Image 1 (cartoon, rainbow, N blue to C red):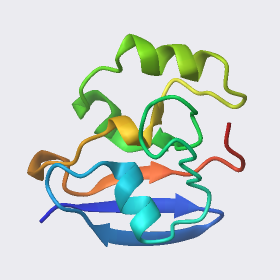
Image 2 (tube, one colour):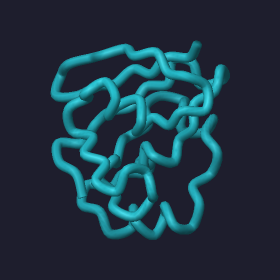
Image 3 (spheres, rainbow, N blue to C red):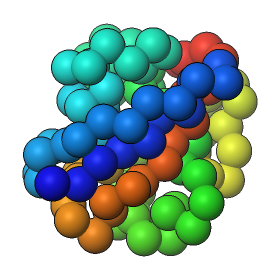
Image 4 (tube, helix red, strand yellow):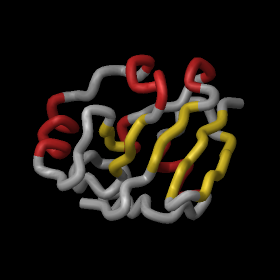
Length: 105
């Protein structure tokens, strides 16, 4: 079972994830602060924005045009920004590390 490391305001939490679940769903089910997820994973609100840390960004599937459009208008976007609702977990992402921005959407 893969796990995700969430970094948030100097705190670190490591949470196991079911294969096929999204980073957003793991965060919301485990009450990770800062992942608001207003749209519930519909890629329509950008309140699940994260920064993908380390070399993990290049291991993810490329962002779809809809995700890129939402990211374009967010404050605090960085080259390693992604919407956590669009990152599906699998065993190759075991240890994925994401930082939660200070504010969402």
